[in-house]
Image 1 (cartoon, helix red, strand yellow):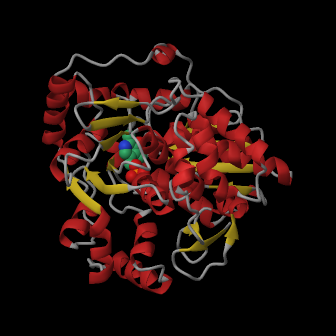
Image 2 (cartoon, protein in one colour):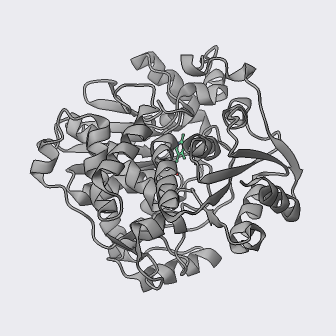
Length: 462
Ligand SMILES: *Cc1c(COP(=O)(O)O)cnc(C)c1O
């Protein structure tokens, strides 16, 4: 399988190169040159299989020729053995035809574990094969950092450095990162805000001389392997509800658009999906674009669903590439204009998107109301991100005959503050982490200065 850039100019790469590279050299994102197909028979044969086996079958064409079957099966099996539920991503029926797909049973209680548990193992595999080591650097305001650390803590060939803004992440989120005492894990608390941390990571990618030739790898959501791993649970949940004989719909709490784009890939592979609903919080660029063709940046708002607080949805570019019928020049032109001024999509691509996608935006007051209402109706306690999905699924679904699967992207204990604000007394952490608040922590506090951070990374990588 070859991968091409959404902006049409960077060279085509193999899966291995794409996973190690991140962004394309022309500023675009890599996508598969052709989308592999799952036939009716393929889907029917998945009924009753384990999650790991479905994962192997769905992802196999994306890595074909680059990781042999037995090795890949092993990586997949190990990745999903870290989940605390035997079904990995269980479906929970809320009412006659509305289901929650619980994606939060991984080590850090959010859906990012599904991709990062596998990505760490894939990277380590390729590095071992090449006889190389690599350094991962990332900035986090919460979920991504801990999921990346958990995904890499056992990787022999990777050292991971995660920057978080000092005293500006919740205690649970900080401890999920800083209590991992592996000798390849380094947490840096930056005396600054998230943007300062992010800027230093970006600057380090732009000039990697401080690493003396060691490769720097990004594990943010533009990495294709993360999208690939997320395709699986769309297929697995639809098959569990009767695909390919029955169509389903999905509602996805969205920010950078990696998650819902993976659903679209599943659809393009042949999964019968009637409708995708994009749920946003008050940071509603995706909703404004779909509903009003207002493709413009607005100021960042801090909401009760912080993992969805974004100004720009980086992975939306991958969907635009499809909507513009893979015209890389048109995508580049649109996104270059978007950087500088409010813009709009052309008519034909927009109507193509609206055939499959609907959207709904949910503000903070409504998030609290939904947490109370959903608990009253179903006895389920939703985390604030999932709450946006619950409301959007009700508001925007095309029909009630088609099963609606809302993706539960985090465990409520991870965002207990919002749950308490909604009037509940609190949410206990799951049993395997109930001592989180007593565990030993390790992190380094550094000033928001690039040279200090780079010196720390250069000195501590192995
Ligand atoms: C990252 C995240 C999202 C947004 O996912 P995208 O792939 O960026 O659209 C939603 N909910 C939670 C809990 C997250 O951590």
